[in-house]
Picture 1 (tube, rainbow, N blue to C red):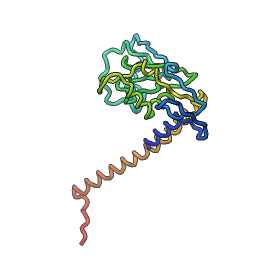
Picture 2: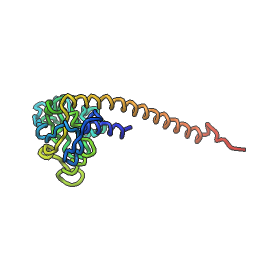
Picture 3: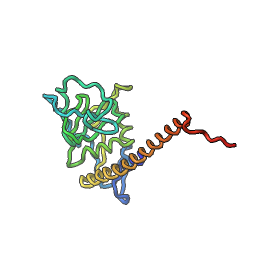
Picture 4: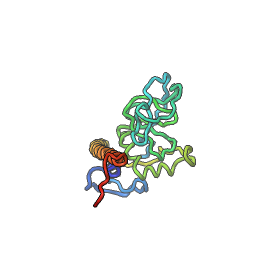
Length: 232
């Protein structure tokens, strides 16, 4: 189900929702085939870095999770030690794209649904809403080919040293549908993801029940509460 969800998202953000749409070769390996009416842009024409710092440190602290995206830091378990003062942290506005440039191949970036602040080590981008949205870019840049491109373009070698800076990210090319179609694609992904997540949660509940039953069964036999049947 998790793999199916990824394939649904990848198909939607790279091919659109119309299976009969006329396609063309983008001429770019990590984009591939794309609908003929979609337009290509370098990210430098889509993103503008927001580099405003808090003077009080009193705003809500946000973190970036590989799986949850941008969330309040208090909602993340096992988070790293927090600085004594948050003064100088970067301001984040709702619908910004927040990007952890350290080891970016882990895809720790996403659309923010909150106003707040985040680590100075992160990059925060305003997205041109006439062309795109942070949520669409979140889905697109997490597809397999873009993650591979991000890994290949990192500066530095080895864990803890690989980074992707704004100048490098700005050179990436994306193929985007007209903005009305783009909003429809995002709405479809939201709806389909909720449906799949509900199925996944149900399957996990069933697995938990079976796991508990297995433990109970083992306990009852090893403690003698149940006898192993012996064939005469």
